Length: 363
Image (cartoon, rainbow, N blue to C red):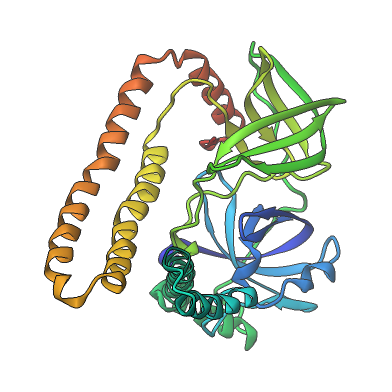
């Protein structure tokens, strides 16, 4: 299939939702597979409340690394998850409208430090809105998105020739491979997520067989790449999910979610894989490229125009120097990962792969 998309007609089973960063993350389970998406991808998600178990749905998606899928649109006779056709601009919160008035008052009272602080804050807010809007524009005009919209409108006209039909009556069950690792099975309840202060790490807490458990994850998912290029989904555990855990020395080392077929590796040593290295580099380069650009724009506003050449020379030095930082960080990360004992993590990884047939998500 062109662009590696999957177009399939299947039967709806259930959906779940969790809050994730700045938008909600949804999970749809069908007889064919599991599909993830963010709420802001679609115009309206209320159709999910109208769907009943066994309803026929038509889905466009692409496969993720762990055997699940990322959803791009859904069509049913009860309604659609319609793909966005118009640019949805990012606007600052209405409360920020007071900032220009505070800046004028600061100028009037000659409060230079406070005025500069407020102006910098307003500038950063506007830069964030502009970057967010540009990112949404990129998502809208990518060739893959044009192809998806074309197929969506083709289906809406009644053309099902490109749709594939699922022949599965029921979802395949995940049976754990035999192992001497300490595996425990149970149902997850009372799910809670907490952002760790001043960090990209997130703590996920849940009750499991009467015991309160938790694990941390580094939030390096799909924030800075278009959704058509997503290769993994956010860590998703909903209340009522059946889990198999490798739990030893008061730590969770691996998770298999039987409800959606996902698996997670939680190594407690420094561990790196090619996929994790790509994720780290993508996020590091995002900050080392765009942070100096924002710094340059701020300098242009603050300093007189006659000093622009000096600023530009400094900017070029910052850009060239910043690009080596991610490579050095990755080099040290790789070095420490090889010096650590990863034997237990490798055993857990092997068990997860043998059970699900796919590489797990690394937290």
